[in-house]
Length: 352
Image 1 (cartoon, rainbow, N blue to C red):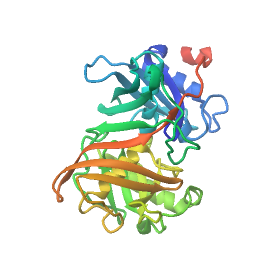
Image 2 (cartoon, rainbow, N blue to C red; image 1 turned 135 degrees about the horizontal axis):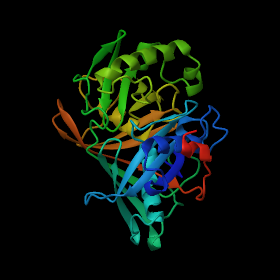
Image 3 (cartoon, rainbow, N blue to C red; image 1 turned 90 degrees about the vertical axis):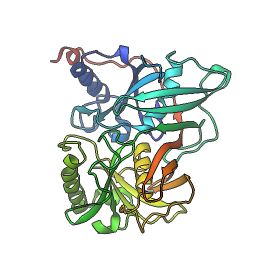
Image 4 (cartoon, one colour; image 1 turned 30 degrees about the vertical axis):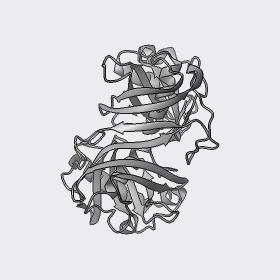
């Protein structure tokens, strides 16, 4: 399925091995273990090498549980540290299509527990005639055409992977002479001013990926802040994401270029956008003087990225000096691409 601007394989939990080590080998084989993923279903890119594992929830609070698995391209391993809000968007349609949630006529609300972070999200899926609707008029940048809208309301996602909104305990840190804001409102992100790293923040992903000196600086900062963000040694992890910011220039509120963590994203991840938007409303963060923030307790933040923009709605409480985000809402779309049998070599199951 395509979920938002990502694509991956969706499994019912019971269809995969219960043993996590075997499960992970199966998922790597399913996607392909080499850099081209030539021997699997992956697309040789982090955004197309993703897996969602879904099962009916035992909790009365939620309908389904969702585990996100990033199959790391070319490294033959997986990472279950982060969430993925794009893949999450298709969890609702998947759950309905597979009988995990009963569809209602009109719209069906699917409450999801994100197991990677133990946070909740409510997905509102269009289901006219009790069938999932995929066609529609909603457009999201990074995806061609239009589709039916899926409204995603994130509930209390602060500290999703690190335990707190500001995991270092400060709104501003200095690393290698660069001011950074380390934030986790659904996704651990290190926000930095592009100009402080010698770039404009308006370059294409290809141009930034070719800048080896820049990438070395970013990775040095990432490795140092990982332990400070309660993430431990992040060398084998895909978090924190590293986001360069610059003043918006297409009518939005802030412009971003995000590394995930080593390749520059063609857009920006769902929860990464939520974390960056949240950083923009925090007094004293690196976004001050770069981002603009609308007035009011409900803030519609437009986060620009290389292929367009991402709108995030933040419901804010507290005071101007100490704001808190009560709920983050956004719009995604999804599409069912194919269903069937995916063949995995017997040796993978046997551990040979």
